[in-house]
Length: 319
Image (cartoon, rainbow, N blue to C red; front, side, top):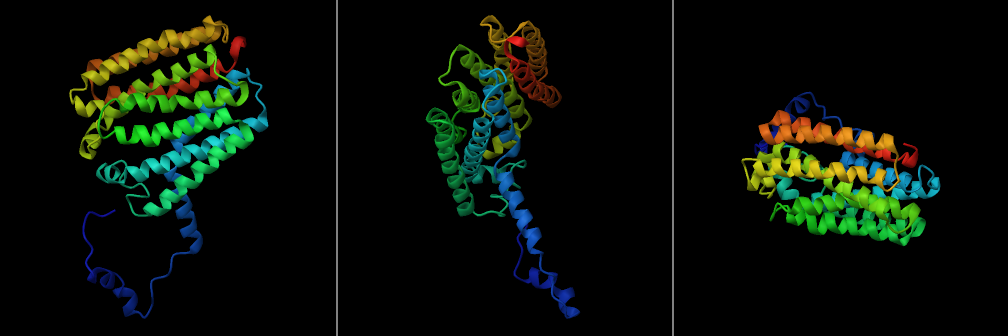
């Protein structure tokens, strides 16, 4: 989107070559318009975040049943979760249009770029949220639907406004990010037990090294937007570095709990210890250097850590 201001004469000047030859500018094909609109709505769902949430839900369901969940229930679970996640992302962007306009990495999103209107985004968010909760309640169970709606509330109503007032928003965001674990568990195994609690804590703690790396890389964007991330409140980055290291350190014994309570085997224990140690080393390097290179290394390590750990945990006591 251009920063300049187009005058009334500019569209006439732009169409002058066509006028001179007696031709009008060819209309954009309707199929191309439809594809572009679909692409904008897909971008509105934050697909990369949605995919991670769906993977977490699915692996939680597999872990709860040791790879034998009901496939039909799993399909409904993933569909309902995807709809709720899409609604949460849409409302998040509806609430943050002002801040998105001020950040380079978000200014071209469909809403701040003007490709979708606030009414379209709000309608999309409302329809997908209601459809997702209703689907989870009717096709999975009420507990899963309740967890899904609670996740939406935490993300949209609590976390999103908190980003403008306190760096504690990260804690609330981490809770919302770990809630898919409880959704997957409730869908196939009922109320949470110690195994579910340990998995919830793994996903919760994992987000702090991940978030701190992102907060450092985009700290200038966050500052321009007025978002109170820890790297904005403390521009030195020391608090972000310490938080990343502490979370990565605490995560190691927490990640070993499934082996201790016999929901995972010795291979998982060794794998979790290796992954946790490598992520901790990246977090320590980030704290010591506080530069973009170390932050991106920690970010990559965190992206590898969670799916790798959960896939091994999915094997249960056979690992």
